[in-house]
Image 1 (spheres, rainbow, N blue to C red):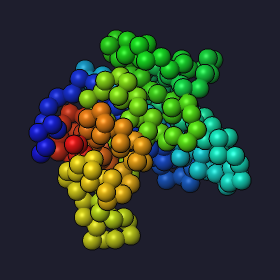
Image 2 (cartoon, rainbow, N blue to C red):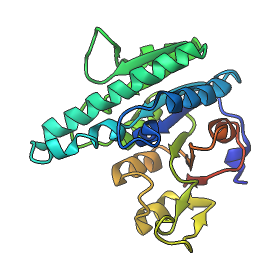
Image 3 (cartoon, rainbow, N blue to C red):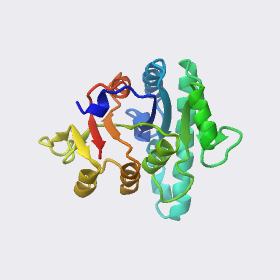
Length: 241
């Protein structure tokens, strides 16, 4: 197990794929999946670890992407940002029902449903043991939610990014298409960039590398894996300098 993974963390950033929220549906939000994820996050919260969360919007935006195919890129990206707000509100509801005090902060101002993103306020929420969900990406087009996760993690001084996906780590090729694909236990940022492994987009990886922010990639579909990853158990792929 990598030495850094043995330590206990005080503050972490969890990056959730929006597509996980759709469960077995073609698109949309499966309430049972969100409830299960909220329960896993509750286990982490109960340990006293401060947790920030960024969620993608692929379960909603890709469901309507054919309608956006001929749209201006900026408009389409704003649609994607709004999709992350929907997912964030769904997770907030599930977390609150599970007993986790939660705040949603959005990079696009929607005062009726969420707070605007303010770094100092976000940190104060974390210090008061509230989970903070960062919605609407960076608030700017042309940036992914992976980049938003790297940015928010850096801004709140998180010690690590946990990237929860549909696969159990990083492979040298697509494990769905190649049964002989090899899973990496550990990688450097440079190896991810050189091999173009697609863990995160290049901007996100570079931002993590510049700030010395490690990344752990793991499968979120197995109940309890969020707890295992955040509490330092050896699962997934560990990426660092």
